[in-house]
Image (cartoon, helix red, strand yellow):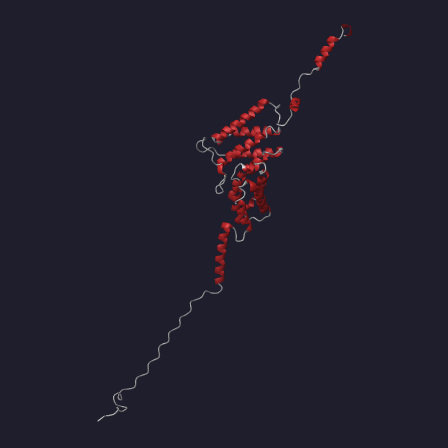
Length: 319
C-alpha cells in the first residue's frame, strides 16, 4: 500500500529554519593622493623653465636671437677675400647699432675676428686694408661686448688688421704712431723658448679661436710690419728716420726672434745701411732724370772761366 507524500513536519520537520546569509562587509574607498598646494605648482614650473632658458642662452644665445645667428653666418664669410668687405660691413653695422651684448654675443664676436685673420696676409691686400681697419677698430670701440679674457688677443690681432695697413699711409703722424705700436709689440715679446732655428709655425693657419695668437704669430706679424715700413722708405723722406729706428730696435732685440726672422731683420738692417751710404741723392721712383740732375749738388760755376778768357783777349793798353 502506498504511504503517500510525507507530512509537512516529516523528514526536515524537526530542524530549525536556516538563518539568512549575512550581508558582505563594504570595501573601504581608496583615499585620494595628497595633492600639492596649487600655489606651488606654477612656481616650480617657472623655476625649471628659467633654468633651461639660462643654459640655452649661455651656449648659443637666447631663442630667436637674430644678432647671434647673424654673427655665426658672418663668421663663415669673413675668411673669404671676395666676401670679406661685405661681411665686415654687416658686422660693423651690428656693433654700431647696439644689437650685440656681452653675455650672449661676446664669444661669437671674438670667433668672427679670429676667423677674419685665418689668412695672415689678407689684411695687407690693398682693397681690404680699409675694411679690416674699420672692423677691428669698431670692435675695440665696443670692447664692452667682448669678454675680458679676449681683449688682449684682439689687441694683438690689430698688429695685422690695423697697424700694418696704417704703415701704408701717406700721413706721417699715422705712420709714426703705427711704428711705435710695432716697437711696443717687440718689447712685449718673450725670449725664444726652445731652439732658435726651429720653424715659426704660428701664423701658418692664423690664430686659433680658442687660445688666441701665440708668440710665433706675433713675431711673424712684427717682421711683416717692419717689411711694410721699408716699402715706404724710398717713397717719403719723413719715413726714413722712423724706419731706421724701428729696424734698429728689432736688431737690438733679435734674441726674441727665431733664426729665420733674425735673418730677415738683419737683411732689412743692411738695406738701411746701404741707403745711408748712398746718401740723400737717392730719389723716389717716378722722378725724371732731369729732376734728379737738378737736385744734385751744384757743379763749379763757369762764369769765372769766361772772365779769365775775356781778360786775356783785351789789349794791354786797356787794362
